[in-house]
Length: 505
Image 1 (tube, rainbow, N blue to C red):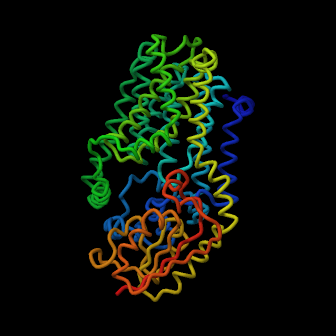
Image 2 (image 1 turned 30 degrees about the vertical axis):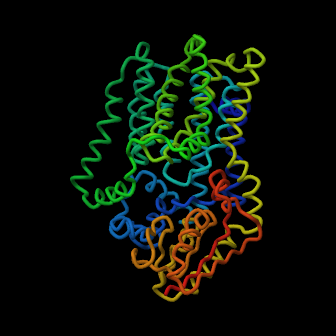
Image 3 (image 1 turned 180 degrees about the horizontal axis):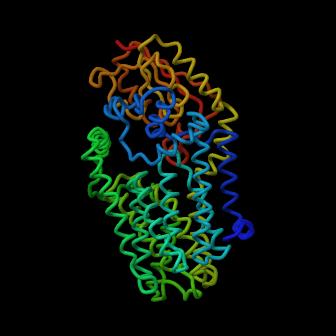
């Protein structure tokens, strides 16, 4: 693995990793899929505005984030925006450039995951099993992509087997963990927890690198205090975002939250079930490792941190936080089947069939959106592609009078950002419209996901306040977002805009 020839041999043996990377680039470059999610422009808008000649602000979110919309965008840590600014300076502030960046970050993450597995001693069959869960990573148009890359890079550096090199690399690992927190606080914290867990599990053989471990706590806290003291505007913008969350509280898991966790992290749940079954039968959790292998502590650290993220999303944190567990489950599944292959492949016939079915079911479940993107999504793109959709959205906006308000979905805001004749409002952050909210937009330019998930019902509820309501769609083919059940499984598949024109009383 340390030479190009070694990497080529590893990629040939672990073929699922280059296959997943090629699939991701093919969808993005040929069909502009997946369509940017409903909150993508929240994170990208300040960079697009700055490169377009404005300030480092995001005016489309002004109704909820006045500081980040008009003074300085600081609703989120700046690590991702710094990388995005460099990338879009080179390739342009376009949606295609954003898609390409996230594809590149996905490729880096996949290769880092393979490097971690090879460093832990996992063979090709186990790596390919884990690599199947790469197809579950389909929501990556936000800072999460970069945060996972930095976090896994920290973990890979931490696992250096040579003692002399390890002493030199651990400070760099701590730095990468801090940078991950400067990109996404909760994802960076998860990888910092992995470093601590791995250090605890390998303490007898590797000791406790206290300086590097403490740096993952002291440095982020110090940076936060510096921001509070010397940049009150940035701190105010961050507090605005915290105020919108307001959902970190203990609660009992709801049925929808459990279903979401099963969709995003079935691999983690299958491995946890296998481990529980081994414990109930009083079997050792992990078989004896080969000399020099670090698979057991790596698996323990990964499963502990990612499992905590799943539990927290069910009981404490916002439910969508479970999506961060989709990344490390690639490694968890691979390492489990490396350490205990007999739990599935060498058990009694009935048990073997049941466990093989559980693994196959988890792979199929996590790949549902990938399958939908490759079939239904491509079918929709051949009906109305990105270029036709944006052209239709631009024609609708250009027909408005100067100063009119228009609600726009994230996917179209990249191309419409330069039109300063109208006031554009991010569809996720419009809040209440009408007299109570102070906004009475004449036009809504929405993706099918945004329209059917939210605005169809809200506009119907406001119908008595309107003189007229006209809904136009240019597509000829159905989209999954029309069904509330399919919308949860396969959202953001169609570029075709839903144009809603409103005349208020």
